[in-house]
Length: 390
Image (cartoon, rainbow, N blue to C red):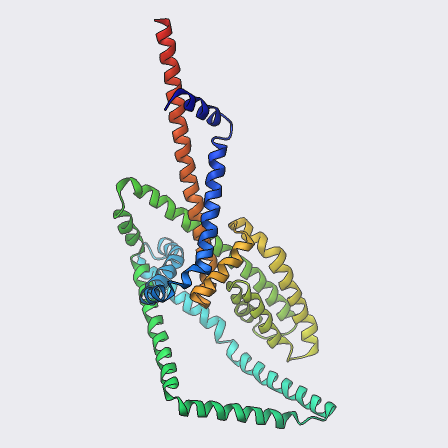
C-alpha cells in the first residue's frame, strides 16, 4: 500500500469515531440484507415451499424439541444448582412436576366454572332471542332450527358421500398425536444432554472459532431470555390487575381465571383480542353490573397496557422495531401457520442479534486493520527520521 493510501486511512481512523464511512457502509449492507431476508420469507420461499415443507415436516419435532429444551434449560439449571445437588435428572423431573402441578392448579378449578359460564351464556342467548322474537314478531327459533337441521344433514351427507374425508381427519389427529409425542421425547433428550450437545457442536468447529461460538451462543441466550422475561413480566402484571378486578366483583377463582386469560398474550397481536373475547364471555352473560365494573374497565386497561406499558417493558429488554415485528408475524404465519406466529418474534430476535453480532465483529476487524495501518505509518515515519539522521 502506498503512502497516499496510508495517509488517507490515517486521516479517517485518527478521528474520534473510527471509520465513519465504512461503518455507514456496514450498517446499510446489514439493513439491506435484513430487508432481503424478510422479503424472501414473505414471497420467495413460496417457490421452494414443497421441498422446504417436506424437510420441515421431517425435522420439525427435533427443531421444536430443541427450542423447548433451550427455553427450559435455565430453569433446570437453577433447580439443579439450588435444590437437586447438581443432579440433572432430578432437576428435570422436578421441573416437569412443577409444570404439571401449575397446569392442574390453573385448569381443574376452572372446569365447573366454565360449565356454569356455558349454561349462563346459553340462557343469555335464549333470552335475547326470545326478546327479539317478541319485539319484531319473527319466528327466530323456527328459522334457527331449520338452519341447524339443514347444516347437520348436509354435513352427514358429506361424510356419507366422502368417507375418505373422515378417514383423513382421523389420520391427521393420529399424525398430530405422534408428532407431539416425538416432540416431547426430543425435548427431553436435548434437555438431558443440553450442555454436552453444545460442547459437541463447538468441538466440530475450528479451534479459533470455538470461543467466538461460545460468546455468540451466550449472548443469544441472554437476548432470548430477556424477551421471555419481558413477556412473562407483562403477563404477570396484566394477570394481577385482572385478578384484582374480578375478585372485587365477586368472580370465583379470579386468580387462575386471570392467568389463563392472559396466557394468550404469548400470541403476538391476536393474543390480546382473544383475552378480551374470553373476558367478555366470562362477564357479559352474568350481569350488567359485572359488565360495567369488570369487562369495560379491563378492556380499557388492556388497550392502555398494550399501547403504553408493554412496549416500555419490551424496550428495556430488547430493541425490536414494531414494523419488523409485524413483518415477522406475517412471514411466520405465511410459512408455518399458527406455530410460525408463535415463533416469529423469537426468530426475529435471533436474526437481529446475529446481524448485530456480525456487525460488531466486522467493526472490530476494521479497527484492528486501522491499528495495523497506524502502526505501519508510525514505523515508516520512524524509519524515515532515522535515515535522515544517519
